[in-house]
Image (cartoon, rainbow, N blue to C red; front, side, top):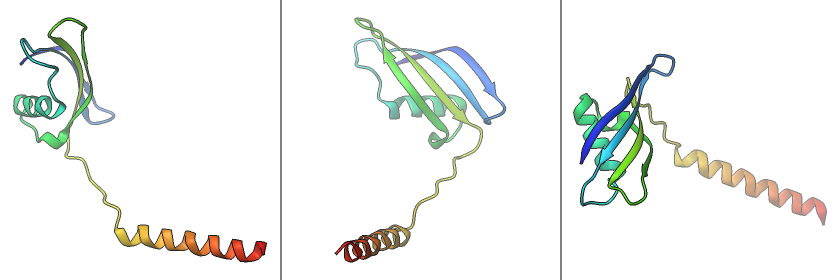
Length: 105
């Protein structure tokens, strides 16, 4: 897999770098997103979690693709929803449905 940077732009507002790439993959299928992320992370010396692949489009009949990549300046914050909050919401919805069904009777 050979990667050529067509366009590179620093996006200061969103604190990221936007890239348009030409990816040549002779004798192989369109590269997987994870493989492309690893290549870009190695090239720009960032963590894989900072690389976001917008799309990979392969040109029909050719072993050449165009990819849109975003490289975040900082690692993304991952907020996980606690299972108790989901359960509480579900219980509240069930209770509301029960009270509505009793009122309609």
